[in-house]
Length: 80
Image 1 (cartoon, rainbow, N blue to C red):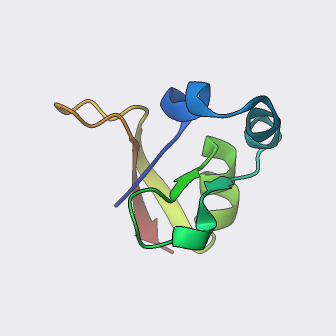
Image 2: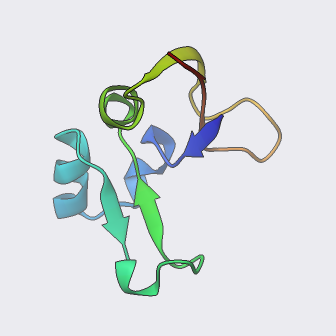
């Protein structure tokens, strides 16, 4: 199970970042401080399911979650 910043966070992206995101590529902000909350990565659904999930089968997907205060996309995968 993983969660990602998906479409619900796209409005926070700059126009150039949004173009990258819309083209199916992840956007990394403030990579120079990776490991801190300031660093963030925004993952398009297609990138998660086609690139990150190689070797796994998507079992469930909840866009924007559906839990209290969970605005991230939720993915459940099973190893092939």
